[in-house]
Length: 207
Image (cartoon, rainbow, N blue to C red; front, side, top):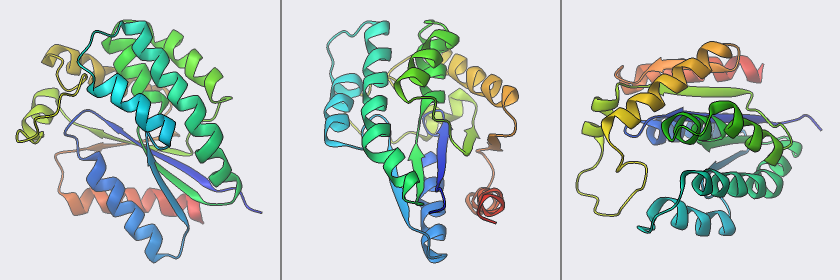
C-alpha cells in the first residue's frame, strides 16, 4: 500500500487557515482522494477535552504546563489518528502541528524553540509533514480579521499584539530553515489565488 500524505496549515490567528484548508479538502475530494481532516489541539475525544483546558479555560496555566498539554494532545493524536490514516494511504490535512508549538510556546512564551520542538518530536516519534502551508499575515491585520462577535475566551487570541508579532517572526524563521517543506503565502492575496497556489504545490506531491 502506498503511503499517504501529511499536509499541515499554519499561521497566526485570522490568517485564513480554515478557509484554505476547507478549499483544499474539497478539491482533493473532487479528485477522488480519501482525506482525513483534523486539528490540533483536538482531533480526538481526548484531544477535545485537552483543547477545552488549554485554550478556553480562564484559570492560570503556566507556560511549561501549556506546552506540555499541547505535546500530550499531539502524542495521542498522531498515534491514534494521523499515523494510521497515513499508513492506510490516505491524505491527512491538519490545522496546526509542531510548528505552532514552536512559534507560540517556544518563542511567544519564551520557552525556547529548540526545547519545545524536541518535546514534540519525541511525542510524535519524529513525524514531520510532507507539506506545511504557512499563511503569513501581519499580526495587526490578523487581529482585525477575527470575528469580534465571538464571546468565547481563547487563551492565545487574548494575548497582546507583540506576542503575535513574535509568533509571526518565528513562523517565518521556521520556513526559511526548511524551504523544501514550507509553502509560504501572503495571506492578503485573494482567496482563489491562494487556493490555486496550494493546489499546485499539492499536485506535485500527488504525481
